Image (cartoon, rainbow, N blue to C red):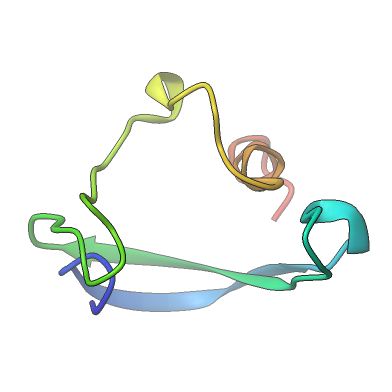
Length: 78
């Protein structure tokens, strides 16, 4: 809610991504959860905006390995 203004209900953890090379700056870990959200997205303190995209309409440039994470989700590898 802090980052997007959305009310989110988490249903389960999908996966934790921790490949050391996923972020060139340093080793980072992301734990991805599955959930549902309601409301209209609004950018938080550190984001100019927040938007919802259909899976087939994502921006070309996603940071780190977020494209791989979305691919895991869309191909049922969760």
